[in-house]
Length: 503
Image 1 (spheres, rainbow, N blue to C red):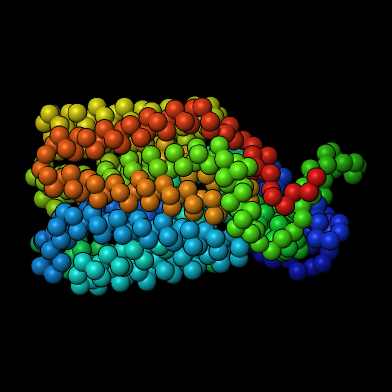
Image 2: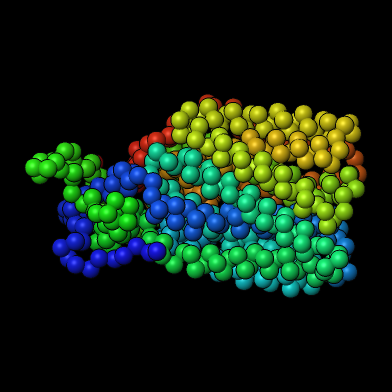
C-alpha cells in the first residue's frame, strides 16, 4: 500500500528544513531517516528496488545457460568466441548505461531513472528473443546491459539514502546477493525452455528471454509508489517536497511525523535533532565531481576501483563461461546445464545472508579483506584440481559453490563501498564510474579471455586464467584491509560530508 500524502498545512513538516538565506537551509532529515526502525516501508523499498539484481541475475544466468543452445541453434550457430563476444557486449552496454544514466540520476533525481532504465531493459530483452544473427543478438544484449547498468546507479543510490545506517551494510549485501535468486530463476527457466522434448532448440532460448521481460513488467508496477530520496530533494532545492515525503515515511513507520524534537509527557524536549546546514543547488558541475573523486577522495577512489575490477573479472570471467566448462570439459548436455546452476546460485545467495551482518558488526575492513582473500585462495586451489583432472562435473560445481559463498559478499561489498564513501551529490555518478571502469577492465575482458582459453581445449590454459583472477582478489584483499573506510553504523553524511554543506 502506498504512502498517503497529507494535504493539511498544519500537518506538513516544516521544522526540519528551515530557510536561512540565499538558498541556505538547515535540515534534520538525514538524522530522522537514520533514527527509524526497520519497518514495512523499508521492506517494500528493498523488494521494489532490489529486484533489479534479480533481473540481472536472470539475464546473466540465461546468457551462460543458453550458450550451448546458441551454438546448436540452426539460425545463429555461435562459436565459443561469438558467445563470449555477445556476453561482453552486454557488459559493455552496462558500462555505458551506468555512466550515462548515473550522470542523469544525480542531476534529475533517482525516481525518474527507475522507469527510464526499466523500460529500456524490458524492450531490449524482448528484442533479444527475436534476434536473427550475431550482430542483432549482440546489439540487443548491449541495450539490455545499458538498462541494467543504469538501474545499478539509481537503485544503489536510493537504497543507501533510505535505509537506516545500522542496517545499511547487511541490507546492501543481501540485495546484491538477490542476484542469485534471479540466477536460480534463470537456471530453472533454462531447464524448462531447453528441454528438447517440449520445445525446438531454436524456440526454447527465445522463450527463455521473454521470461525476463515478463518479470520486468511486474517490477514496473511495484515501483509506482516508491518516493524520491528526501536527501536528494533537500540539496537540489525542493525542501517542501522533501519534508512532505519525510513526514509520509515517518507516518508509515511510526504512525506520526518526527518533525519536532521528542518531548516527555510535560512537553519538555528530550533531545534536539542534529541539523545540517546546506546550500541548495540544482546540479553539480562535472569539474567538481572530478575534483571530489580524484583529489579530495583519491584514496577512497583507488580502493573502490581495485575492489570493482577484481570482483568484476572474477565473477564475469567464471560465470559467463561456466556452461562452456561443463559442456566442453565435462561433456554435460546444454539442456542439463541449468541443474548445475542451482547449487551454485544457492552458495552465492547464502554467502551474503550468513556473512552480511558481520559487515555491520565486525566492520567493513576486516570482512572485505577476509572475503576477498578466501575467495582468491579457494579459486587457485580449485583451478589446480581442475588442471590435473581431479574434479568431476559434480565436484567442480561443489567447488564453485564454496568459492562463491565467500566471493558473493566480497563482490557485494565493492558496491557497498563505492555507494557509501562519497558525497550525496556525486554518489550515483561515483557508483557508475567505478562500476564502469571496473566492469570495463575486469568484466568485459574476462568472458572474451576465458572464451578464448576454453577454445584452446587446454586445461592448463584455463588454469592460468583462474590464477590471474585469484591474484586480483588477493591484491584487493590487501588494499581493502589497509585503506577501506570503517563506515559501519555511521550516517552517510559522517562518512562523506555533502559538497553543499555550509560551515
